[in-house]
Amino acid sequence: MKIETGWVTPPVSIGGLDHLGTQAPCVLIYAQLLPGITNVTDRARYYSLYPWFIWSFDQRYPKDAEKFVEFFRRSDCLFTLISERHSRITDHDNERHGAAMVGRVKLLQALDRLEAGHPLTLSDYTAQNSKYRYFQNPMGGLGQYYAGSLSDLKLINGSDKPWFNYTEQYGAPLAKQLNSTVDADQFWALVESGVVTLSDLDNLSGFCACRLPESIDECNTLTDLYFDRKKLFNQVGVQRSKSLGLILNLVNSLENIDLSESVFRACTYSGSLPGQVQWDVPSSLRSTLDCWALYQRNNLLSIACQTVFAVALRELEPQNSSSKVIYQSVESFAEYFSNGPVIIAVTDKIGVKSLGDLVDSLVSLAPSVNAWDNENHEIQIAERMLTAWDHGKDSTIIFELLISVLALLACRDVPQKNPYGGLYMPLEALEDYPINLVSFQARVKEWKKMSIPKFVEDLVTWCLNTHLKVALRKLRYTGRSTFHLRPTERGMEVIDKIPPPANTRPRFRQSVQILRDIGVLTRDNSKLSRPTILSINGKILMETASA
Image 1 (spheres, one colour):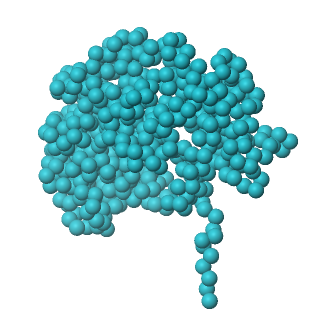
Image 2 (cartoon, rainbow, N blue to C red; image 1 turned 45 degrees about the horizontal axis):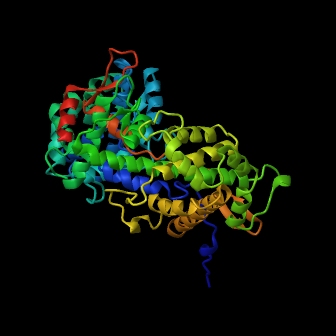
Image 3 (tube, rainbow, N blue to C red; image 1 turned 60 degrees about the vertical axis):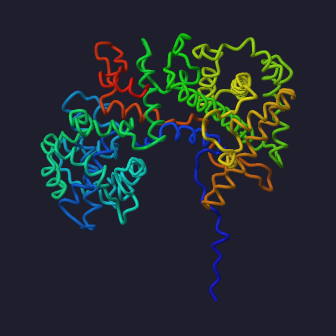
């Protein structure tokens, strides 16, 4: 009789993400604020190129499922090669042309070889068994990145199997608009032959990502979708439009400083521009700004707790066999650490006995929330904390910084207010993520009564036990192990590399690139730093989104 013993097979260990579950509430927030754009939908033209491919293929090869995948993969490669080649023969501005195009790293090498005189055959890059394969997912960038967003925007029907189909109401008209501005016959002839020359790429430059604003109807349709100018998406469309409008308003408000993600974080958190200048946001965007402030507050809590986790793992991990100390539980390690040399030194530097004393002192001593460029502001302290970890600084330095961040967050808190304000964040959505703004608010009430060592003990225990719960839940549902700390018969042991603390990425970079692609944001080439500015259309859209 055959006996199956697969159930005793050790789980596969993977690096994993979000080891404390602290990033998940941040993701829930920015998903509400920027729906339809994700952290992998980098370029606006893919929102029309992919529906166009499906529609155009259907005109030429109806019901030919055998050709669909291979021809799609060849087209996916061509879109990237065309954009990169156009950059090289024009202004070399990757931001306009090839940046974030699908499979770019592999295909840059292909273009280098082609320009050096070697032949380029697309199947060398589309074949799954090729060492030059541009993408593993059979449906390339569409299957991996864009399908969900295109479905949400009603451009494709992702439920049509075996692959995808365009929608008659929205996808087909957009595809026809693109089709009217490009040489589709030459494109498909190249897809069929599979052999590419430089002149082929040059002749097809109309497909380049930078040419979108020249395709006026196509660009207007995409702008309608992003800003929901035709009111197709109800509250989802309204919120996306307001977040994009807020970005435009920030660009319009900044002087002598370029738009960046760090500037966006600081300005939305504080409601102020650099130099403590009040950001005069229209009343219609005020609630959106408040929600982005809550996102950044949650993000600061997240990176502080990730740093607690990273430092604790580093202190647990012995440098050599003689320095190994056995801790039978998270609690025993937390007790030792909180009374050890690191926290003794931190307590001496802070100069107060309890967390309550520290928070009370910050009420009068902390810079105002709008002074985010002050070195003692939590925005600046958090950046120094992440840099200190990256540079391998001493645990005493890092822990002092993270305690300052948490104390400042506690100082800014209004206990009577809902920590998530006007966001839709029901408690059941937070059940799997124990470290969040609600639990932090409740924890602070208890921490204020504790000495600094006792507060640290509870903080470390909270973070390490949360990791064990999160990793155990992932193991249960995925069968994969993401533990970085594990109780064993030899005590608590650190597993694999220590994950560095990191910010969440709130779809800001992708949103800005899309706004550039549709011609709403541009660069001021009259200045050496080429700061980001609004185009004429950008100013109009800013007013529309603010209405």
